[in-house]
Image 1 (cartoon, rainbow, N blue to C red):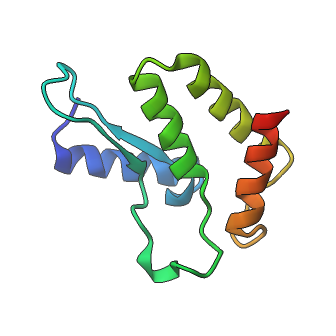
Image 2 (tube, rainbow, N blue to C red; image 1 turned 180 degrees about the vertical axis):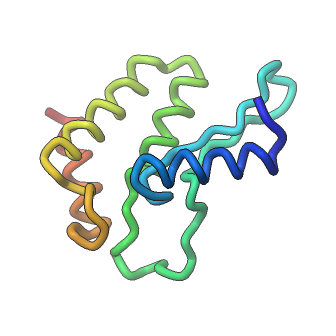
Length: 114
């Protein structure tokens, strides 16, 4: 557990180690549930590339999986994470610029439906 400032630094470092900020999901959890929790990609909203179909959605989708798990939907969370893993196992979304946002999203959705 860390403060927001140090938690942000730690998540950025962890993301850089695993391959880049574009691949890391994050969760700011309120442990006692007295307030809301927040789930988002480590990289934030990336407004500089908005509308260009070049953003990698994996971190946002993974954050959604974390939110589902937090809300008690463990089976749905696991299904989403398995779909991300299936897409990346095929090399989809693993290298910057290789796939469009739409292509990565479609591959993950197809894996969810399989």
